[in-house]
Structures are given as structure tokens and as C-alpha cells.
Image: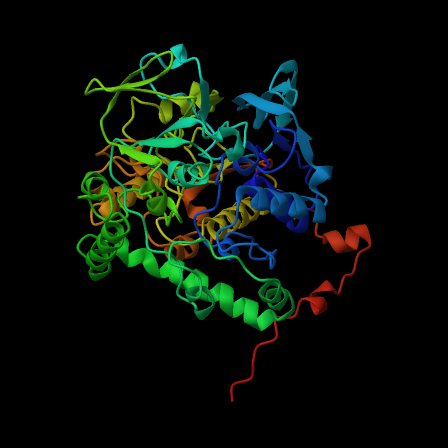
Length: 544
């Protein structure tokens, strides 16, 4: 397993639970679990879906402090889960994957790692030969500085949202520029506003800010736009009243899943959302109408990632916040010059400019025939081809991906999908173990058919309309490469049962039934319970 974020933790738990005779390593370049929630620590960092929907189905957290959980709270949750299931047995920290190469003679992957310290400094190398690789490196952890001229000439504090070393109090009395209008920016601006002397938000595009997620009676008591804080009594009830908690979370999940209709072009939900969100934004920006004019989109709701952004619009109308829609020409030693010739000086500049979301790996992943995923998913190809987001090509056997291309969700909880992707992969490995399969590779026609379905699906959605979005590799127009082609429920249904006919299997035996052995069951050979089936009775209900 590559990566110890959510997917690595889920994989560690399920593989340990369900697979026998497996040696598991979870390789992680950092020195703790958490993935993106370990690496990101910018002011205001929160999950932008309800916290109770952003926890594992089998390991709920009843004591979230707020409706939208902070990044620190999510990281603490991940650490607790990893400790509870004793994943330290499998975790190999300070291992940064540098290359993966398939050996078709041995039917194994050869992995190369740099050994790195807590600061990322290399102090050695190590190789590992494995039968199966699960890639869980995530799509929101590869960041670069924006391509703005003079960026490294600037002499003040320069931070990227993905590598933010200080808290908001560090900006007390300072002038700050925040570049961007994505989910990071709209959390950073309201977090810095109470501290900074001035905050300038540079926004080149437009974005919809969603209405607060507040449908239940509990949350209707929260002021409009705020992040509701749960009381101790509410947390106690979540923890001790199982039926109440189940209904509360089910309500949240149903409403998240119910948003799917918004993503269809000209649907009733889409048209209603445009009207409601425009009205909300105009009201909150009434004191600064020039912001509403520049910021309220003319594209469909959902074309860009939709986020509630508690407090962002409220911060924009504060007297110490300016909204700057002019494009940035260059950085100077002291600040930023815009294309209209205006120059502003800053103590701190924050680049909330996102991540590399092309899915092109930064390391070679070389399969059969020298086929490198860097080429297969690179700029020369219009989109990263795949099978159900989890398999790459016939030339990359025994290599699975969690959170790959087209596996994000336009609505619903991503963690539920991750859990089911892991279940799918575990079932595939179980088949390989059970039937002595050396290599399992997806058929090219299955890849082609899935990509054809995916592209046809998105033609009827708002995601394919014109807007700049990381859903489309940061382009205004192009194939949708990040999102699942359907609803969250649709994704779970599609991957609930593997289609073995879409794969080619190479067994260790010449005869396909070589795996059945010599006529004795494992229980008989190993002295186990030969009547085990009496402990596994599937009792059918008697019709009334």
C-alpha cells in the first residue's frame, strides 16, 4: 500500500481483517498517518462536507466539535483509528516512492524508495519486491508555485496553502494577499480577516458559494453562514443513542446524495440552485455590489467544485478586506502588480492556487512493454484512461488505484466510495490468493468501453459546460477527468461486484484447476474445524 491517508488506513484495516497469508506494508513518505490532512495546515482548514459524513462507516466519530470539522480534528481522528486497529504493524514511515517497474518474468513489481527524514531530506534508498501494489497517494498533495513572473523575487513571507507554517495570529497587524477563489482560499480569507490589518483577495474567476447545509432542526438554530458548534449534550446523545445518531447521519447522507440532480443540465434542481445561490450571494454582498458583479458566475452551479464557505462572503464585505479581480501581471520585491498597472505592497502573500490534478504521476510506473503511466496519462493524451478508476491498463497487472481518475464525487461522501473501492480490491486479491493467480490485468476493450461510457455521460451534465475547474485538469473546456460518471449511489452499485470477465488471469499452474489441490480441504490438512459451515449459516427468513 502506497500512502497512509484515508485510503491507506482503510486498506490496512480491511486487508488485515479479510485476507490470510498476506504480508502487508503501508509505505508513507511522511512520518505519521494522515495524508493530505497531515500535510495541510492552513488557517481555517476545514472539511467542506458535514463532519459526520466524513468519517468511516464502521468507525464513526460521535464527538466532532463542529458541523464542518477542522483539519486538525480530522487528523486526530485518523490517528485514533490507525492506533485502534494497531496499524503500526504495517506502517513504514519515511519511504518516498521513486519508481515502480513490473517484471513480467517473475510477475512482480519492483518498487524503489528514497528514505527521507521528517523534513523530507534523503538519507538512503531501499527496494522492495511485491506481488500487488495499491496506490493511495491521493490527488490533492502535489502542489507547485503558480506560474506568475517574479514570484521568487518577492522578499516578504510567501506561503502556499499546502505548505503553510504559521497560524492566523502571525498576520496580526500585517497586510496580506490571498491569491485564489477555490476551497482553500475561501477558508483562509475569513480566518485571516480578524487578525490582519488588510486582506486582499485576488480572484481571477467566479465561483458559486453554496447555501449553508442546515436542513435538520438541530442545525436550523445556527446563524446563517456560520459553522455550527455541537454542545456537549448533543455529542453525548450521538455517542449513547445509537438510533438517534444513525438517523442523524442518514439524514445528512441522504441530503448529500440528493444533490445529484443539480449536476444535470437544465434540470429543475439546477435552475433552482442558480436562483437560490445568486440570491444568497447578492444579499450577502449587498454592501459591496462590485464584488457580486465580478464574482457571481454566469456558468452552471456545480461546474466548479461547490463549497459552502462559512464566513467567506461575510469576510469580503468587512472594511479591511478588498476583492481584486484584475489579473496579476507580476510579483515585485515588495508586493503584486496587476495588469491595470496598480501596485500593492504586502507583508505576506498566500498562494491558494490548488494542486496538480492531472493524475499524471511524478514518478515512473513502468508496466509491460515499457509502458509508463507518465506517458499514458501525460499531456500528450486528452485524458487518463482507466477501468472503473481502479485499474490502469493491460500492461499494469496487479496494480490498483484508490482515488484515481474519475473517482471523485460531484455529490455524496467520498469516503464511502473509498471504502467500497478498497473492498473491491480486497476481493480481487482474495481471488488471486484462492486460485493461485500470479497476474491479473484488465482487458483493453473493458478500458475502452468504460471510457466511452464516461465521456458520453458527462455530455448531459453541467461539468462539461464552460468554466475553469480542476474537474477538467484546470481547463475551461475538455474531458471531465476527476469525477465519477454518475451519482454516489451509482458508483457504489457499479463496483459492488467485480466483473471478472473484464480481466485476464495468469495462474501459477498450467491447468486452470491446479489451485484445487489434492482432494483435501485446508481445514482437513491443517487440523481446523471441518464443520466450519455450521458457523456460517445464512438463515433465510420465513415468509409471513
